[in-house]
Amino acid sequence: MSKDECKQVVLDIIAEIAPDEELGDVKPEVALREQLDLDSMDFLDIVMELRKKHGIEVPESEYGQLVSLDSCAEYLTPKFNALV
Amino acid sequence: MELSRIVITGVGLTAPNGNSLAEYRRNLLEGVAGISRIEMRYMGEVLAGVCDFDPMRYQKRKELRVGTRAGSISIYCAREALQNSGVDFESMDKDRVGIYVGITEHGNVETENEIFNISQFDYDTKFWTHHHNPRTVANNPAGEASLNLKVTGPSYTIGAACAAGNLGLIHAVQMLQIGEVDFAIAGGVSESTHTFGIFAGFKSQGALAEHEDPNKASRPFDLKRNGIVVSEGGALYTLERLEDAKARGAKIYGEIVGYHVNSDATDYVLPNPERQSQCMRAALKKAKMAPEDIHIVNTHATATPMGDIQECEAIREVFGESENTYINNTKGFIGHAMGAAGALELAGNLPSFEDGMVHPSINVDELDPKCALDKLVLNKPIKAKRVDALLNNSFGMLGINSALIVRRFSD
Image: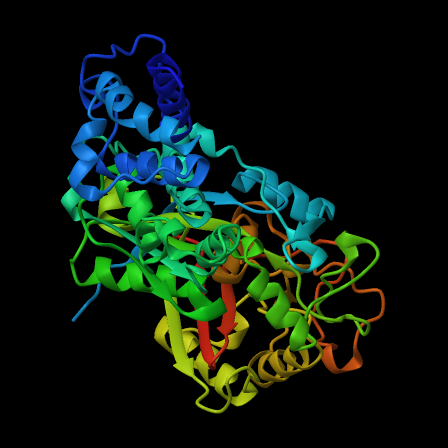
C-alpha cells in the first residue's frame, strides 16, 4: 500500500464517521480537527474502524500519530504493509 | 397553598399513522391504522407500528449515527412541539426549561445491536463501541433533546413502564408548580420496535398479537384479540403556567386539572382493577370533578385477553353510572407505543375539545361481552354533545397505574 492509498483509507473511514463533512479539500499536512468537526469520540471511532475493517491496532499512547492525513499515512502505511 | 394552573400550549408527535397532530387526528377519525410487518432479528417477521418521520429535519447525519432512535424521536417531537407552541424559544432562558420524557425501557436496542456486532468478531469485547454508555444511560432520550435544543435546565427521563407517557406530563406539571422550571417539554417516547427482546418476551408470555392483516392485529375489546402490537413513536407537549401562556397569547389546547399515580403491589405483570379504579377516583378528586364531568375516558387496554377485561371492570366501577362518559381506545390504530402510549393517546383525543368528535376503538368485529361498557365507541367515530374533559389511563408492568385529566380551557 502506498501512502496515498493509506490516506484514502483514512478518508473513507472519516466519511462514515463524519458524514456531514466535506472531505474534498482536506489538507494532508493540517491537523484533521482544525479543518473538520471531529471530537475525541470520533477519533475513537477511527481507531475502532481501523481495528474492525483492517485488523490494525493503534495503542492509546500512539493516538497522536493520527493527527493529520500525512501523519496517519506515515504511521499507518507500514502497519498496512506489515499485514500482507 | 394555591398552585398555578398548568396548560398545554404545543404538541409534537410521531405515530405509526401520522407525523403531526392534524394528520394523526384525521387518521383516527377516518379509521386509518398504521401497523406493518417487519423483519425482526432472530425471530423473522413480526407486526409492529413503525414511524416514518424524517429525522434529518432536525438532526445532522452524524447525530443520527452517534445517537439513538429514542433520541431522534424525542428531538423530532420536541422541535415540532416548540414550533406548534409558537413560543420564541431562541430568546428563552434555557436554564429555566425542563425536558421530562417518559420511557418504558431504554438501552435494550443499543445493547442488542452491540452484542450482535461483537458476535461478528467472535465476541471479542475490544470491538464493543465506546458509544455504548452514552447511548444506553437511562436519560439518553431526554439528554439528546437537551443537546439538540441547547436546553440547560433539568432534562431526564421518567421510567414508568407503559404508564410513562402520562408520568412525563405529571412530572412536568409538578416541576412547573413548584417553580423548578418556567417552561416544560414533556411526554413519552418509544423505540421498542428495534429490540427483539420486547417482542420475544411478549411472545413467550403468549401476549404478542398476530393476524394476517397487520392493521387488524391490534384489537382491544374484540373477542378474538390475541395480544399486543409493539410500536415506536412519541408525543411531547409544551407545558406552561397559565399566567405565562396568557401573557404571550399562546393557543391553549387544554388544562391539566388532575392526575394520580399508584401501584398495585400485587404482581409483576397482571393488572389489578381495584387499584386502577382507585387511581381514576383519586385523579377525579384532585380535579374536583365527578365521573359525569368526564366526557371521554381513553383506555389503556392493550388487547391482551385478561388486561382488557380488568380495565373495563375498573372503568365500570368508576364510570358505570355516568351517562356522559364515552370510552375509547387508540391502540387499534397505532398498536402499543409503550413509553409513548399515554402521551400519544392523549394527543389523539385532545382535538375533541375543538371538533367535538370521539374517535372509536377499531377492529372490534365481535365485542367481548366482558368488555361491553355502555358508552364504548366502536369502529366509527361519534359526535358528542360536548367534550369538556378527558381522562387518560395508562398502566404498566410491576403494577404502576396512572390517570391524567385534561379539561377544555376556560378562564
